Image (spheres, each protein chain N blue to C red):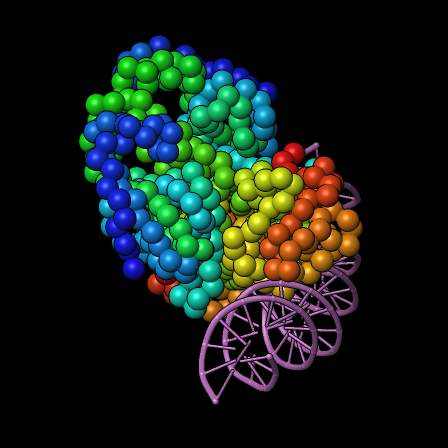
Length: 225
Length: 225
DNA sequence: CGATGACTTGAACGCCATCAATCGCTGTGG
DNA sequence: CCACAGCGATTGATGGCGTTCAAGTCATCG
């Protein structure tokens, strides 16, 4: 499944891609994953950390009977698979055909031992993940279905809208498993928002969405306080 | 509300209390909070970080209409209020009369600038918080009411059972707001677990609980994979 | 074209929320 | 000392939101 397509011997020469993590002594490689394939599994040794170059990734946990909770979607530029223990706590899968860069966690830790800027970067990313997870607990614990979908749209709007249109890489089931709902409920909530005039479907696929009323959507999403 | 009771000029002399955070140049103080009082509010500047010496603390977020989601309970020894941004993301309140130690965040950061062991400690604590939040999203997104209450009991059993009995510091509403339920549903779930013989109420208050069947409870709680 | 997958929509059900009554314990004041 | 208010908790009755089950549409692909 994993096809190595390129070896980049010196990450430092392509500074923008891994952002703060770039460091001359950390080597990284690129790799393509077909739609639907696993990148790493929960409880596997966390040998690498990853950055999405192009495409989209979901990270999730499963219960024994198959119930799934997606913790986050990772889009171009996002880092995922960063663990502090030795094992991955989520399974990661490509949502669409995806290119990811990866680097040995070991190398990162070796650098972090002596380079406090690197530790800071890792801390910063961990904190960002924490903040996202905390906001998500409020959503999952206390928001209604329409509020959840509105919050999802606001989040995705920020992350992938270009020229007034966002093209969702994930299907309704993924959205549902991210929001703690069923795909039918997600669909109904989208219909409600469409009827309110907050959004429009553009293409034939129902995944190209234009937000008509960002303020209304944000208010509905019931963010903090 | 905040009553300063003690100034400890050199944290290093009491190494066990602040654990990994102990450092000779970080000064900390102690303080008592009466049951129900606020320790810090969401969106306030994060001037201090705290450790529970005795008692219990809840940290939560609110929606505009009063819906509340408790993110975590903090018991003796737990650190809370650690932020990487400049503002607190939760409100913190004492659940019962509580003694907490606190120290200037600024001092901590000053030490962290040159002391990589300190950054590591902070990273470790942040990671622990992240892991807890991630497990909690699975619970809130996908578990049934009885599974949630069972998971809560397993968690609390580990953290505060002594001599086979745990004495919960929080009331049913707090538990409900932690689990994304109502207090009535929590009460009914506890009744179900009692009737199954998994637990017993001991005192007159319904907050002293003995777990009769930890394995059964853990299975019901539906932890990962 | 038939098969398949993604999505929507409808109908019925069920879990949990809501509303309400009751119980027991605690503390307070007559 | 006891009546009574107040709080925490349980229990019951009812209702509603989201789930489940099912049908149907549309686009894609063999």
